[in-house]
Length: 65
Image (cartoon, rainbow, N blue to C red; front, side):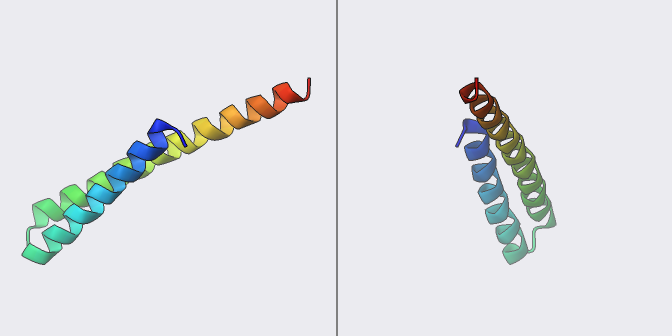
């Protein structure tokens, strides 16, 4: 796991908490921020996943040489 994957998961979790808190207290602005943070976290996590797969592909290709 790389830092982007980890940071993305943390951002998603924070977003879920904010969204739930916003729903619980009826604060649409907080709920919206939570949804936005979740989306940003998913993007960052996906970027980290792609980096990890690329690194693994390069490593496995180098192992074949």
